[in-house]
Length: 383
Image (tube, rainbow, N blue to C red; front, side):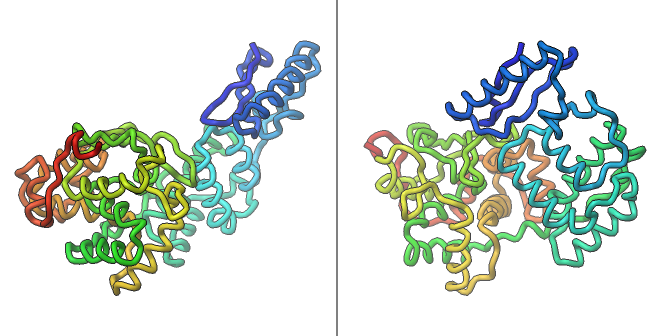
């Protein structure tokens, strides 16, 4: 049966041809108007199949089943295979943009349109060295460019486009601990105070960032219906990337985190700003959900103004984790707050900050680093 499907907000044609099920991208967003167009096109495809005049490659030249219904394409150029490979993948829009950006910005300028089978393991290792020489972080090379490259060549090998996978045996670059570069207590407090004085629309956002350990995309997606004042919990259920809200990429990211007193203070203040708007908790000065790229510009200027060495906003998360671990908070509690799949992940990432693991409720972190009035968490406060 032929139909039009909605997959992650995009429309796909789902049909059978020569006994093979085909799910092909329409290139359209899932709107009512686009669905009408897709249904009309699906009727055309169905009619051609029924009358035995359907040509798969005519409708879907970069389709996922192109090798099934056409002559096998040997030795494809690097850039052409990338286009074909991406056309057959169902991805979040943010993921598609990131992979496409990594390809055209870094991979294509080096490999260009070379035939896939001519790219060797030595070529790939040389590419890694060139990226390092350009000053890119090992984590960026591993998790962006090399990730796309490995998946491409793996699929090309499976599809028998190439006789062997040259990425096998190419090791990940050593990342060390360079990505964990937290602020100290004085810097954290100075940053919060700086936002309070010079950019008050973001002070509650920054305070919560330093005292929850959540990811920036999780903060940007937070809505008031996910804030449970009665239980003292924040329910992390979505992430917001490139102005689009969706589910996190890992199941471990779905979690309930504790509202510590500094966060309760910040949310109480934020309630007066955005509660009646009925949607997102953190808004910019135009009452739109906080955009990470625009906030980063404010962040850069604020650290420069305060004379604090620049580190990206994501380091608020690392600051929470390292300060909590350094005073002996229970590693299971820290892992749960961060959304790690297990305490092992937390220990591996922050092992140099681990002294003595004893507590499990946030009290050690509060007693060591926080002085202030502790608001009560109850319905009477938020009426």
